[in-house]
Length: 130
Image: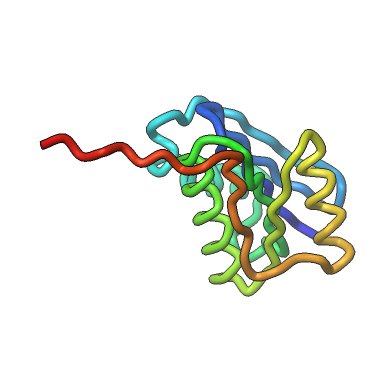
C-alpha cells in the first residue's frame, strides 16, 4: 500500500512515502511560514523521485497534534483534501509512534474520510488592532 505521511505541527515539516511498512523516501525541511507555499511542491517531488504520481497513493497518514494551530490546520487540510479527491483513506495520529500507528491503522482498514486536529490547548485568537 503506497502511503504518504505528513507532519506539519512545527517549523520543520516532514513528509515520507511508504510502501507497506517500508519507507521509500523521506524529507524534512524548514517550512516555517512558507508551509502552504511549499508543501504541494515537496509532495510532488517526493512522488516524482520514486516515479510515482498522486494517483498512485492508496492512503494518507497525518500527524494531528498537538502543535502549531496554523501548521496543523495546513497539514490536515492537505491530507483530508488529498484523501477526498483521490478517494483514499486518511488516518490522523499523534504521539511518538504516529507514523507506525497510522500505517498499521490504514493496513487494518481503520482509515476514514476525515482526520481532525488535536491542538492540545484552547485556540488563542489575537484581538484585531484598531
